[in-house]
Structures are given as structure tokens and as C-alpha cells.
Amino acid sequence: MDNNELRAYDKQHIWHPYTSMLNPSPVFPVASAKGVILTLETGEELVDGMSSWWTCIHGYNHPRLNKAITHQLSKMSHVMFGGLTHRPAVELAKKLIDLTADNLQHVFFADSGSVAVEVSIKMALQYWVAQGKSEKHKLLTVRNGYHGDTFGAMSVCDPVNGMHEMFTHILSQSIFVDAPACKPDEDWQARYIQDFEQTLIENKQQVAAVILEPMVQNTGGMRMYCAEYLRQVRQLCTQHDVLLILDEIATGFGRTGTLFAYQQAQIEPDILVLGKALTGGYMTLAATLASSKVAKGISADQQGVLMHGPTFMANPLACSVANASIDLLLESHWQKKVFAIEQQLKQELAPCSELNIVKDVRCKGAIGVVELHQPIDLYWMQPRFVELGVWVRPFNKLVYLMPPYIISHDELKKLTQAVYQVVTEFSERIQ
Ligand SMILES: Cc1ncc(COP(=O)(O)O)c(C=O)c1O
View (cartoon, rainbow, N blue to C red):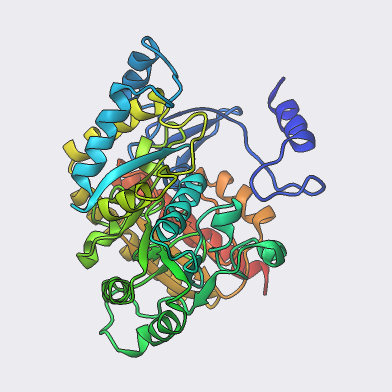
């Protein structure tokens, strides 16, 4: 098939994320990728501003990561995890336990972020059943959150913006409070936690756990908030005997400037969910870490077992590349690099805030967001970015960048200039 035939067959037969089969948005066949460059079947080269949905922090086709996979491939690509274990999984569990909060001592490997969120919910619910408090079966969360597309995860996504509104009537009913309103560098005010505190106190007999994305709410609006909010949430959860699940699937592995975003609040979650950049974007793998209190609490029940076990859990290829990706990250000057990306994003996206169409420009770590007053037109905007030689995937009212950490100053400049140009052209088009 040539490029046009590939596109035509794809258009007719393949569902892409959140797309229609009657009026699909355009797709661009990629032939190869290296560093921060995606090479299309047409030969066009695009600078990647998305890290393939925030995963490939070291860029594409990295020799160390390639080697980790091929080395493992020559031994075994997969074995079942029921009754068997293997070095890549044990080594990865040790790395994750060593790198995260001291209380997190137990790891469940899942095969995608959404499934790892399901597991975190199941852990929380099972924990309370095992404690003889099965009435604690609800989840409390903040609006504007996003935790995945499976049914448990959907039940804690924003009920309106979370893309799953049509399922609201069949989802488990979670309890929602206002999204965190304090901006990252704003002075703390008691009113910021009022809705959360009041709702938690009113419902504490039924609430098993609070779940949220620390410091940055991602797909639910790319909203950034202050560390004090998290500290208050932690304290209230402890005070009212509710577990705290932090979903770091998007923020983990350095994206917000610290290895894990919760570290900015100096707190410890009861359950932590990791995914996306865990394998440096090479393979699908996620992990749910639990404290000894939760893990032993679940196991103390009559059944004594955590009721989950996907076929491909702890896939050895994925664990091997995750081990290599974490080593690579820790050996690099990632913190300096993420800080430099943040400074450049702040400086080069700032002119966007002068455009009438722009509501807000905000940056944190290697995340730069331009929020518009109105929804973007993906059918026009996506091909326009490609014409300019960059890969940027806007959604709703948001045009944002989350580049690989290895991006050079000039490559990032190409991305920020393209964002400014496309947002300017969009504002002219809609006048
Ligand atoms: C915070 C958060 N949680 C969960 C998920 C779901 O992960 P996955 O797409 O791997 O199922 C995502 C995906 O974007 C996410 O950003």
C-alpha cells in the first residue's frame, strides 16, 4: 500500500481514539521515529511536542532502550505471572519501591494506566471489606479529573468534561467536589479546601478513598494547582479514616519538575498509580503501589487475595525496558533539563496571552498550555501543525506541549513558534 492507500484503508476501517467512523479526523502514517523526530510515510519530518501522549521522555528509538528489549527478547518475551516470577519484574518492583514514598512497599503490575486505576480502586474497596466496613464503598474525587476509559476509572473522571457523560447513568456514583482552585504559586486560603472538607466529613462513613492527580490535572483540562491543597487533602484523609490514591500516570517520572508530583507536597499516598513514562514510552505497562497498611489489610480478610490478575501483567519485555528507562532517567540531568524546558516554555508561550482568543497560558515542568476561550477546530488545526513541521495534538480548548526531555532549544523553539502561529491564524479564521 502507498501512503494514500494506507490512509484510505485506515479511514474506512480503523477506530482511532475518540473518533467517528463516519467523519474521522485526519491521521498521518508514521514510518519511523528517532530522537524527537517523527518521519511520516511521505518523508516529512515532524518535531514531536507530545511525547506520544506524555510517555517517551527519552525520545524515540533510543539505543539503550532498544538494547534492553532485544536483550530480554533473546531470553523470553513473556511468561505468565501466576506462580512464576522473573528478574525484570523483581528488579522493577525494587526500583519503584526504592524511589517512591517509604510506606509504599507492595507493587501490582498492570497492562495499562486505566487497568492500574481499576486495581487501585479495587484495593481500596477490598481493604475496607476486609476491615469489616463494607459500607465504605464510594470514591470521592475532584471535578476536572481524568483517570482512564474503563468503567471504574470513568466513574471518577469529571462527570461532564471527562468524555464519558453518556455513561453517567450506569457508572458507580462517585462523590465530586470542586476542582482545586489555588494556582501553583498563589497564597493559600482556607476557602480552597472548604468544599472538599465539608463533603468528606458529610460522607466519611461511605467513602473508601479519595483519588486525584497530584499538582496537575491532565486530560480533564491541564489545570495546575498548589501543593498546599494536597497537604490538606492528605491530612483530612488521615483524620477521617479515608485512603488516598494518587494517580501519577501522567505526572510521574519527572514531568512536573520532581520525580513524582506528590513529592512537592511532602506527603505519602496510601496507593500510588504509575504508567505512561514508566517504560519510556516503549511498551504498555503500569503499576499500582500500595502501603503495607493497605496490602496487609486486604490480605487479612478471609479471602486474603487481591482479586485481579491480567494475562499480560508484568510482561518481561515491558519490565526490562522500564528498568532501562528509569536508569537512563536517573543517570541524566533530567531535573535541569525539565527546568530549562519550563523556562523556555514560559518565555516563548507568553506572547500567546496577548491574543484575544487566549484565556490563559500556564507552564509547569515540561508542560506548556495555551487555553483558548473556545474549542479548537481539530480538522483544520491538526494538518496546519503538520504543514509547519511539528506534531501537536490539541483538544477541546487546549493547545499544549509536553515534549520529550531530550528536546533541544531549537526544536522546542520550533514548537512554541508553531503554537503561536497556529493560534494566531485560528483567531483570524474565526473572526
Ligand atoms: C492521569 C491519568 N490516569 C489514567 C490514564 C489512563 O491511562 P491509559 O490510557 O494508559 O489507560 C491517563 C491517560 O491519559 C491519565 O492521564
